[in-house]
Image (cartoon, rainbow, N blue to C red; front, side, top):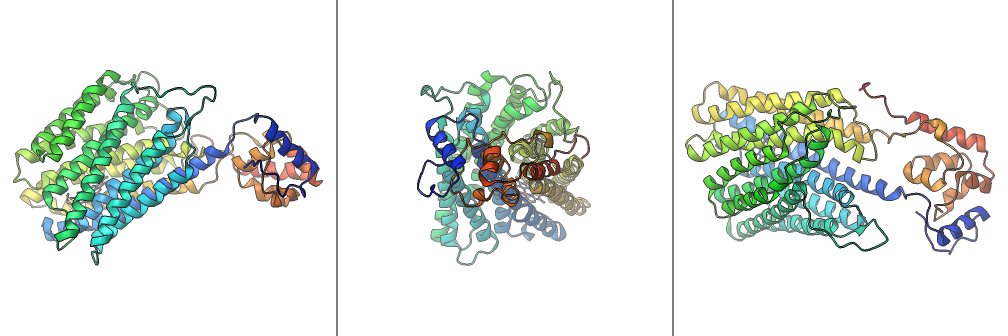
Length: 531
Ligand code: HEM
């Protein structure tokens, strides 16, 4: 990064000193690529952490629980503490981590502000990860659980407060005047605001439960009614509305839908608030009824089932993903209807779990598996999805597993019979889909950042700072091919051209450019359709 500190510059070549001087006296002529690289790295940490929670503490434990339940034909065969640990790992560890990371990456851009508080964003990541991992660990290994359980709730809440600070702070990119913040007028922003407010509330409810358990309970197990109230807020107050909020942007654009009905914001947010209030007041029938109405209004407002007004964006991803986005919304309807039925028929014990997983696996996971591979690689410093075939496999297998799960769970828990044998198959299918998704995104991250220009675009006029900051792997290549000052300089002037840097060190122009061109030809993007 460029630095105005002059100490230690005496040993620098003349070209470097002049460039540092120039940096101080004039504004930069090109946008600094460093903040985008840092934002990409921060998002990658959230994505990788979310994937870890999804695979092991989340899905593997869920599969283990379901297989135990199916083997013994009894819901009590799985430890309640393990079931709750699984639920927290999936909802907060996976979905919550993705939402926090994506929001801190994308919302400042949408609001045309630059994210300056990277240190705070990393603190959010650390506090959230330790808090959610601690909560999971207490659930599966409850020795000496009291203090760690409360601590996990406190850490999650602290991470949330800092995340809100990151989201509302940050400078406007227009340097000319300080424009006052305008009240948002679009559906997506309001859903996001109410979604995050519900997350704050869910974390407070969570903290209160952990505190009362630590005071007097024999085990770290949330009482069923309190757990249900907390889950309703976390699901129908936070994750589902935030998924709708992001749908107004990404689903609308990528599926080429008509603009969402923004005037629905007031009604939807009022209904979300009413659902959350009913959940707090433990009026579950009313909360589930409101969730069903909310789902209908949201689907209407998002126009998900209306034909696309423009061609969907299908480049370099599985071409049928728009159908899976619509299937996800279909699952949400199923989940909301089955959830309400579970309240009306309380003796049918499998309906609650079937509804929950129609919403979590059918809606949330399908939506993330369909839209994540479309947006995340681009956000992660312009990468390309590793494989659209793996994306297709994860979507098909997940939905087949979910279909078996939702249809057989209600029957098995209530009537028994052969449906018990289907549940482990559904669990293994869902696990396979999750592993495929994790591998696909993991490999996407492992690939080098592609260069979106050909090797012929490499030239000596471009700034050295731009090469090294945009593509950090060029640094050792440049040092090795003769740019010795680069190895020892503390500050890298933004206005120093590669040509001047080569002249300063007497490096061979042919050699440096040849090495750079070889590097950039190695990291060319794959052609669309090869995957
Ligand atoms: C992918 C395969 C999955 C399997 C095999 C699985 C399995 C289970 C099982 C056996 C239960 C307890 C009984 C029941 O409700 O049926 C459960 C509960 C739960 N699951 Fe899953 N699940 C999976 C995915 C997910 C996902 C993706 C989410 C959320 C994003 C999730 C969230 C929950 C929640 C919130 C609970 C309730 C926890 C509680 O009672 O506190 N599950 N899951």
